[in-house]
Length: 72
Image (cartoon, rainbow, N blue to C red; front, top):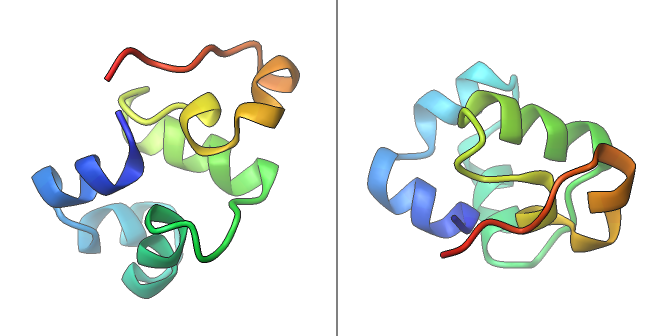
């Protein structure tokens, strides 16, 4: 699932709180205005229980974390 889809379905505030960032920063990531760091991409994957994967956020990092892009 793409981050924007997750945010639309579940909201940004709880996710932002869980990963210690702001909803505004998540919005920037979701709309492609900023690129998630490897650490942030992994935090998002963990906080969304894998619904948004590192590969969804940063396909260039998928080999580093051993993940593949989800089907959505």
